Image (cartoon, rainbow, N blue to C red):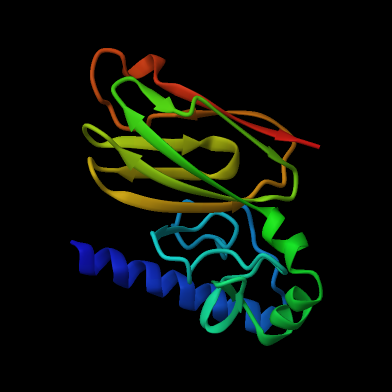
Length: 187
C-alpha cells in the first residue's frame, strides 16, 4: 500500500513538472484532490520530507536537485533561478512559509485555529493521536486521511481571504459531526 501511494505521488509530481515545463509557468492551481484534474501544485500532499512541497519563491514544486543551505538549514526550490532570487533576500521567502503541526483526535483538532496571511505557503504536518481522521478544507480542495501515528505534510498557498472550516472527513464516532477547526486567512 505504501509503495502504491509513493508511486501515485511521484506520478503527480512528474505530471506537474511536465505541465510547468510545457506552459513555462511555476504557478500552481488550487485543487489538491490528487485526481489529476489540475496540476495540483498549491495543495499537494506529501509524506513528511523537506525536499518536496511548494517552492517559497515561485510556488512551483520543489525538487531535490535545486537546494541551497542558509543558516545551517537546507531550502529546496523548483528551479535554479529561484535559488538566485532567494539568495538576494532569504528572510523574505522564509517568512512566507508557515509551518503548523495539527493533531487530530476524537473529537477535535489541536490547535483549533490556524491564522495565516494571504499569500503564505501553509505547510501543515498532520497527525492523529488515536485513529484515522480526515483533514478536509473544501475551499482549498484538501481532503487527507491520517491514521494514528502517521505524519502527512499538506501544503498549499493561502490565496483566498476568509475563514474556512477544517472538518473530519472520516467517521470517527458519535462526536464526529462536531469535530472541526478553523483556517483564518487574513489580508
